Image (cartoon, rainbow, N blue to C red; front, side, top):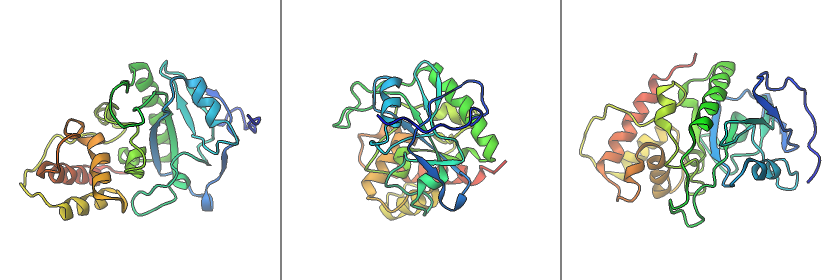
Length: 251
């Protein structure tokens, strides 16, 4: 593994962040300030495994933060710089997600390769508490609304499924650090893919296959419906999510 290039000791301005510099970073395109936070899981069993890969120059991947299941937070790339975590992705009509996003990796073994839930572990309270601390700082620092926090699966439907259906979006929503399943749903009874995709595009999903967008949406907002066929509730919940996002204001 190549030796990671150093950065200033105060790069993260937070006493609870352990510095773990990654060489896999660069300037954001056009000097853009981050306006998005993408949550991932590592797909690895330990923080040590994840840090080794995310700091390996030959792997060409990185993130700004890694949060261990114990709650320890590692800083790999300063927030003002571009990390390599989103890959082929898009959100709100923009494809270079890495230039606009801060990437946060949560240590979790993830789904088996066949996509089934067996072995996929919940995220421990200590890990979620540490994530809440990181998100609180990030949203305040960059003056971002809760709707700026999205899933890797949101920006890359069909290609990525993390952090997945066991991630506690509702907990983040209650803390004002993300959008979770909405409480008020207006029932229309409509069951139209075209209507679903219009609402999905308004929310931010890109031009991905219908089923891929539906899967990503359900993993975040309707996890109990993952195995069901497309239905009217998918449209109604998506529209409710769009309304909630529109009410999420910049600080």
